Length: 430
Picture 1 (cartoon, rainbow, N blue to C red):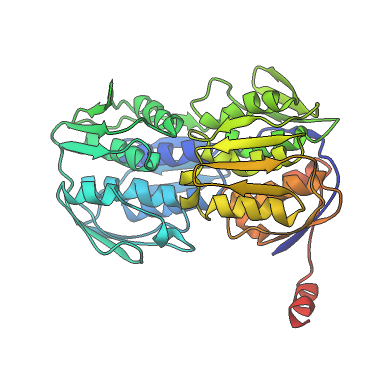
Picture 2: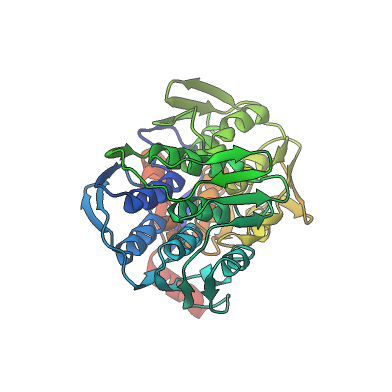
């Protein structure tokens, strides 16, 4: 699908913002592992969340929908299961250790570039603890065996999803386990979300200087009802759009004490020079005298696409550091962010560890989403502030995390229209 964006600053209120996909994954899995029914309210309406639900149902959990709420009733785990993870890296990396801890023989499938996304060193650590995995890099990925307790060693700069998967699984094992980090932990906020979710479900994890200790033989206990908090990652696009608008954009339903690392968007927008007002669970951002800044992306990799767009409208140069892990996302986000900025008339360059974006504005043009939801949404924000129209190729990719993105975009006064298929066909023929 191609979406045509006309230049027009966004203004108004998003109330409430979409619920957190990161929190949703973790709560759904914890609820499925508990012994009682759990009502999960405001579940993130994303393709990734649906993928996790499919896998939990394959694992024996019964899930009933009531609007945007889900009621989960755990069931008996089967001997074997097929799990379709869609394009969700979180789903695959969380469910692998969880199913292994339950001793379920599984075959994992998925779409897009999911098979290519790395599982090392998680796969090697699981193999050293009783699990047999088929060759990585293609589907189906087959797993059998029963995960055993013990010492798991991971570098802190690998995917935090590996650590989360183990944290969800290890409490179920008979013996005690530990996760030892051989280097400082990046994306620490995502691990913090996991730890808070585990605590909510009665699971104890001991924090230590160089890792985490997980007592075995624990039982997940449902709190009965969980309301998923607002998503700072999704709100970041509207807040960035507010920084390009004199009238500004307000987002309601955000917890400023959240464990989500992407709440750093507020601090960064202030550093850019935007006018930020925060009160209780409402945040408003308006345009100010935007200027280039230096950003450490180590804990906020998902913000980089929209931060790069913000930088393109600031005066001077912005430097974004610690970007290497962006190459392992739904797309190579170093390359796709560069191509986004350049395709709309801006300047951006990157080395292995940092990206530089020149400010001064964007002209508009044709931007490819590369099947990446965050690139598509960043392109829409860029289009709202560009000099001319912007065409987003592959705009449907927003459904991975934010199916209603363009509806909200229009509710804020944005002009977004689907390009007719007939026009697309004629262009291809030419």
